[in-house]
Length: 157
Image (tube, rainbow, N blue to C red; front, side):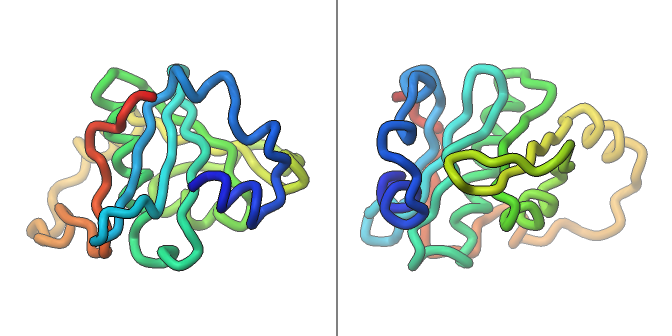
């Protein structure tokens, strides 16, 4: 799946797509209704989220959002205070919607412009504790409105 997105579509050299972090990372997979993998992402031991990829035909359907939320939940559950990622610059608005803040300047990674982004769980928790509930919970907040499921256990490879 990652090969289809990174190597075939984005022309990332195959020799750098798989790396030494794969065996020690937690991997999340998103499946379509037919059980086919349509998205993936990984969480490294140091709290970095990476290798977020969704097949072209599944984009815009909530798959990336579900993957990112599952990875952030896994990071929080194991006690990480923050998560960081190297965002392709065209995806910065996507990550901002989840509370990530861009840092520094753009840089090149495999011929694609990127920028570092971080999201602190502590700052979010403090902010939530200080704000009263402004609305009743919406049932849509608890489910992904997409034709996919995400492995909530974030399989370790």
